[in-house]
Length: 436
Ligand SMILES: *[C@@H]1O[C@H](CO)[C@@H](O)[C@H](O)[C@H]1NC(C)=O
Ligand SMILES: *[C@@H]1O[C@H](CO)[C@@H](O)[C@H](O)[C@H]1NC(C)=O
Ligand SMILES: *[C@@H]1O[C@H](CO)[C@@H](O)[C@H](O)[C@H]1NC(C)=O
Ligand SMILES: *[C@@H]1O[C@H](CO)[C@@H](O)[C@H](O)[C@H]1NC(C)=O
Ligand SMILES: *[C@@H]1O[C@H](CO)[C@@H](O)[C@H](O)[C@H]1NC(C)=O
View 1 (cartoon, rainbow, N blue to C red):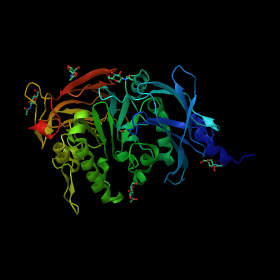
View 2: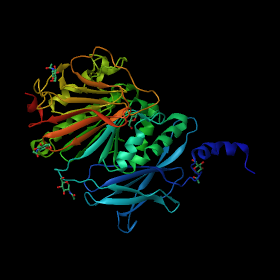
View 3: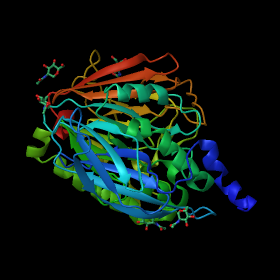
View 4: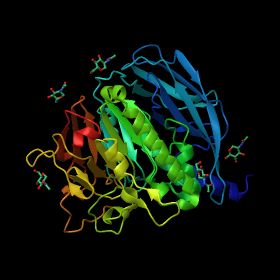
């Protein structure tokens, strides 16, 4: 007979309806590491198994192609030191814009069957994104709408701008497991691109670093990738706040950002990918009524830290100098759109058409997807850069239409999917000289 303690330890699995089968793949998600024709499939098993993806064209013979990868052991740092294996398989030589069907696992267990469309690598492709931050395991209000819209094929990629699960490390990383199962219904169908937020900080961001598979060799902390006419740069604002994990990370990231933006601004590169879009968790500006960094004039993300040695540079000057067009943020559990802003001053394109040839980057804060902390409140007297604010739960959509036109809109989940805000950013010229 099994001792009672054994039944107790199985209880969470029985409650969740997940069989205690430790070779069964779960938490399947996709990412794009920037190589045209590729897609990475990432998933989890509790015991070590082979890592295989079997796939085929949608409507064709199932699973007539197969790819192998590797698994890494992730040991959570909680009391139980729970172990799991994170599997990564890179599919290559996919046909642009072709639809595929796949499952992943090994002969010890296979996932459900999922599908995806290989990204169109044409420069004239107009990618559509859903983007948000601060989506939790509890109260994930926007999730159902995002699941349906993703499965309807409305998005080519999702940008999750930090703060997952609340928090992935909790209950010995079982909250992380549960959250990754929750988003499978989105993330197994389109690339799910991420950056870290403050809720990932436990044990030096280890759940975040281990569970995602972003481009580059930084454990998903900072990286860039291209799609259509956009160059998208993802980074960690958290390096300004968790110096205990290494001040060198702050400087390393800054140098990397500088080098990446320098390269993206080479005339031949900027001509091909004129839009430079950044995503980072904590905003430089916001008008919420909490005491967060973005509510302060001398925000660390914006102006850097002068209280440390050596002083650390902020990001506003860097992004301005390299002509970043759009800056996406989260962290505040609200939606806020700013007039083009630099140095705390509004720099409209013109009074009538502020986003036509704007004289500074356009900032959007979208952190109201839904989590156990609920939504935040605004301060009643915002500064003049604040253009539109909403405390509804929701998320944003963005389409990089062509080299001159970018469209953004905000969806209110509270108002059953109503679009409550939208803008066109129009730029005949990109880069630093566009500001002058
Ligand atoms: C399988 O995983 C479970 C849970 O992590 C662990 O207790 C067990 O020792 C593992 N078995 C093998 C054969 O690795
Ligand atoms: C990729 O997108 C471009 C621009 O919309 C389109 O012309 C082209 O046909 C697409 N490629 C494929 C393989 O569908
Ligand atoms: C935290 O993780 C980063 C990324 O792996 C690493 O470079 C850094 O040394 C770690 N810091 C500590 C204190 O372990
Ligand atoms: C920027 O443009 C908006 C919209 O036309 C306008 O309401 C606002 O006053 C302008 N701000 C400045 C500082 O010109
Ligand atoms: C870009 O798209 C906009 C909006 O659809 C359109 O008006 C404009 O003519 C397009 N520009 C180019 C260069 O294709």
